[in-house]
Length: 628
Image (cartoon, rainbow, N blue to C red; front, side, top):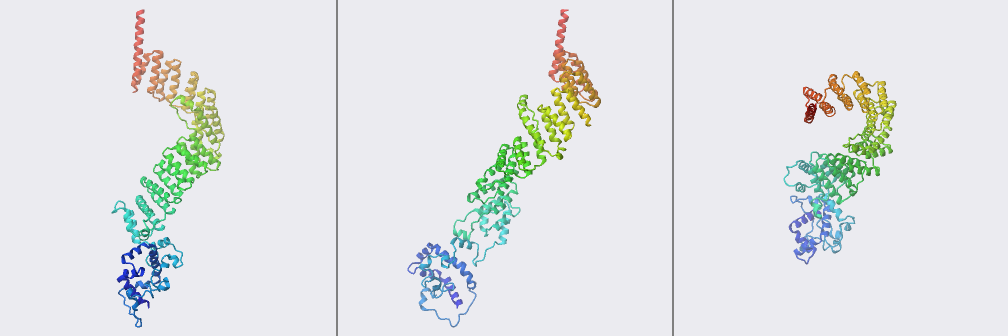
């Protein structure tokens, strides 16, 4: 029975659908007024069309599979069409609706398919199904006309990926090309695009911005592009893809994009994504940008973790923003978000390089309280930094910083006590730095005590540490203790070098004990075939102070016998002493000739001094001769 009726319904629909529907809706209204009324009732028409699309297309697929080419014969016993239906072009709507169902039983009104009582009912109310309009629209957007879930065409997907990979060769904008492609914008599809290799970052950002654009209306949602729901998983994939390129422009564009996402919905951006962006700015050398991202965590609804603090400190220290790095360190310690031991060690090294030694020491103490075992190399570097000798520009500056130096070296001494017995035997460098700093601040007593502790417990001191303490004792005038330490060196199998003899000689010269200084000099000549210029210069300066210039000249000529070539400074100082103190221009002139023979040229001021003394001496001799 349904085949001839369906065939007739299809025929009458094609031939005069408007004529058919107009009298049914409003029998007394004109055709144009009927169209206006149909457009004004969008909700009822939408529900009916959705009903027909979703429900009846699935119930009777064979109805629409029939084509005009198919020819079905009517049964011979079919009754003729009643004359009462001629007003409706010969089709009996009271008996059968256009989908093959009984109108009276389905809609409860035999006069109209849109009955007065039923038109106001929604899809779920009419069929007792709790479905809202938005849910139906969403289902229509992802289903085809037969109710099947729509899938992306593989060829279209490949075309999209090729389009994204082809940078600079696209006709028109990327968004216009995206609009021409019909895709189901689900999470898996977007992840596939974002994880595709060799796609420029700017293209990925353009694609993502296109995803974020909301449709203009309901029908655009159905027939164009449904609104895409941004998820944390998708954003993480986007950040990972952009940060792999290490390009400044894309990194800043990504940061702007994340701000746009947060304005629409908070909680989508993850802590991992922001940490990755900070690390990207750190690799690009953009410390200020990394610090700005760090300060935006609370606004983004993200929780700062230990990696956040470490990556920010690293980015700031790379660009020498050490004061900001100390601020981040303070916050890290206040919230107890300490990273692993290796990263804490790097933070300490960063701060030490920037001169923030006390801040680095505070980080060390906090890690120690938390039983975090830091890398030994970081502790060594911290001790060396605390014991660093900074040469002052002026002597007054050195005096001002002396108290600060005492404080920092005391901290270094405390760190040395934390060494294990096993590692202490190999920690010669940090111990040596502390000993030198103690001697630098003239705290020789503690330096000597530490030296004796090293002899007893390790690490075994070498010549450098002995020389530092001997030099400190010689400067303080304690020559007896300096000689005792030199004897201790010899007893431990160490050979005093030229520097050792030179500092002891310097101590004796400073005290005016030239005989003792000459004894040490003679011993040095026996032990070492070649002495340093400083060794001779120490004695020459001492004899010049005593105005024993003949011995000074003799030492200057003796330097060549021991393989030491006098330099310009040696000649210059001795010639000045001869001219100003002894007025011995003859000896000074001979030394000048020796300098020329050795290829050393005396400066003009000293040469003029020799001529001036010579003229004065001649004038004085002439006056004496005239008086005689």
